[in-house]
Image (cartoon, protein in one colour):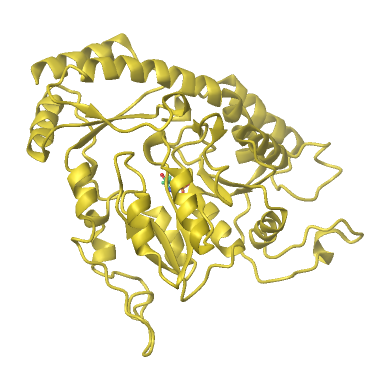
Amino acid sequence: MPGFEVFGDEEKKEVMSVFDTGVLFRYEFAEQRRGIYKVREFEERFAAYCGAKYAQAVTSGTAALKVAMAALGIGPGDEVITQGFTFVATWEAIFAAGAVPVFTEIDDTLNMDPADLAKKITSKTKLIIPVHMLGSAARIEAIKAVGAKHGIPVLEDTAQAPGASINGKKMGSFGVCGTFSFDPVKTMTTGEGGMIITDDEDLWRNMSEYHDHGHDHAEKPGGRGADGRRFIGFNYRMMELQGAIGLAQLAKLDDIIAAQKKNKAKMRAVVSRLAGVTFRKQLDETGDSATFLAFLLPTAKQAVKVNKTLAENGAGAVYFAANSWHYYPEWEHLLASSTVAKNGWPFKTPVGKRRVIYAPDLLPQSAKILDRTLVYQVPVILSDERLAQITAAVEAV
Ligand SMILES: *Cc1c(COP(=O)(O)O)cnc(C)c1O
């Protein structure tokens, strides 16, 4: 999935044009910047690419989740539902918003199971966050239908699936908003960075103001210092350098995905030779961003054994069932209520409030799926040598 594989002159040229003005800040400096607004331009192009009306750039994908939740009015006492197979950032952001994460099972898409989601809604549920893991879509329409039934909005964590789609509609544009990450290992990268897209102007305004200390960004004499404030904000501003890299990377995104699709097809043909292998469910094969190839063996025992042989032959796959950053039972710090807060927040809240407990065996259906799943990252550039190595490893199995 990494956009860094295709770094080149385009990124350098974009970055140098920022140094030529010397303006690293996305706001103000009207004279020095000579009309160059990289972050703003990146937002406009990213929104257009995704088919959304508005985009808000921020410092990371985690910040994107935090800013979106702040703008949606999520706070202490609220429950936010996400899936038990995701990067830790999704639920870190829920805690950071003061809310409590509730975890659903995954289904054959390796994403949120809408049936389990329906069971986990309570009177406290204020937001649903499906995650389009490993480059392809969750059952977003079914998830939205569950939310709509209870009047609960859906935020799509699209950090791992920029450019993915269902029937031509980009992931991230189905929910009330969608968040993206441009960290160093994502499909397109700005080093660090994130984005939120939405069609809701009021929501976007909340994001824009919250992410910049509450600045109302109204045109007026006196500039920034004279800005008004509607509420207390924070600082999650993206730098012009990141905006510049983002523009160059976004221009390459469709080519990145096209290259990954070709490489994924080659890798899949090889992996298909494993006895009893099946593949992760794709809702729309053409909309897959093809960043990963996920395949399932008939039993957990077989998956572990197959992966051992693959690894011994230089082509080990990721076994997410044992991955400590992406899978609920492996989040020992969550299960143990480990927090840096001296008063035990958010797990040991004061008397009268709920104590939050996460049982290790909460998600048996997810275990049945992930225990059998192996995952290869699909590179943008796949050498003949690497493909031959994977082929030899599969033959060894
Ligand atoms: C990478 C990622 C994030 C967080 O993005 P950062 O930019 O690293 O903060 C959030 N959610 C998912 C699913 C991710 O993969």
